[in-house]
Image (cartoon, rainbow, N blue to C red; front, side, top):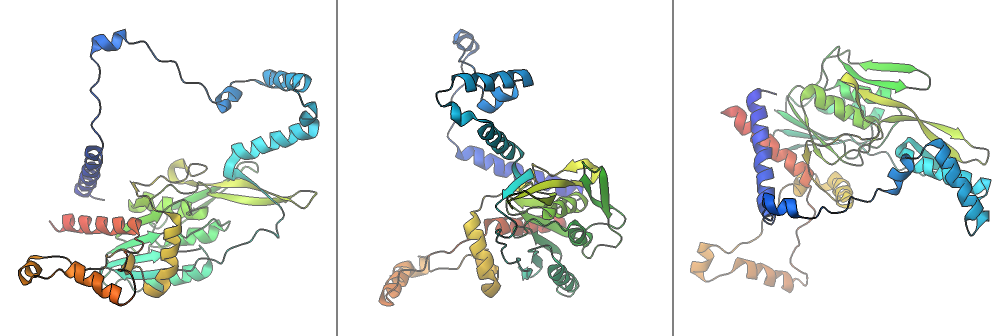
Length: 371
């Protein structure tokens, strides 16, 4: 990305932040130094239970448990089994997505793999929703990338918002190779317990070299986070949307005697230059909020209607100067016509604010580059 382009993006984001600040209520005037010094300091914040427990050493923890067992009104709730259950429940809560307890491997219902979807928007922007990072979708991606030059596409929007977690990191690396430079490391799969590292490197030229934007949110998980992260590094691609799941790990299913399954993270993906993805995930460069239910509704409907209806507002009649001269009111006429058809006036549908922001950025960058 050129220095001039970087300055434009900084200016755009700064202008947006200024608007947000101006929309807020004015801040109260800060007190004078004299009044500030005479004010009585407020009480310090009460530490959380987690902070208090973290401050206890092994001996104090053992003493606290023994005091509970000797003095609590219902000692039977502090048996060895109950204490072990509480300890394990606490471990699961602390490790978050690092460990998952399942009833058994057969009961976990798997959703159908999200398909690949593509569309050219505004005549020159390729919108590619990768879906699940599987072999059929990789083949669909290759087929679409081969047609970009003929379609005069100069920008690509990669949508990872329908890319769930997968353990197949080798296949996921193939998606990244389509956008990363040759002979560059993509990511490293590090297994700490076994002291193993496997680094995936691109051995091919990228299929597209141009403006690339990435859409991501909490549904972007697993290896998809690593793919999105490395494309941001090498292509200077902006990530638009929300924080990703922080689940870029390889899981191993360990069976318990009862048939339950302990799904444990045994390896994690590390981006070039040692950037970890677990458990924090990827933070967006351009945060945009969107309700997950509306997003999934858009994705489902787009298979028949495309994505254009969700980024372009449908025009409706407006009161204008010509209507005033003729004594007409187009808005009122449209409402009356809808009532004659025994239905309410058409409401505005759901809108993909994340994709809309990406298209706005493509337009802004294109205008700047032509100057």
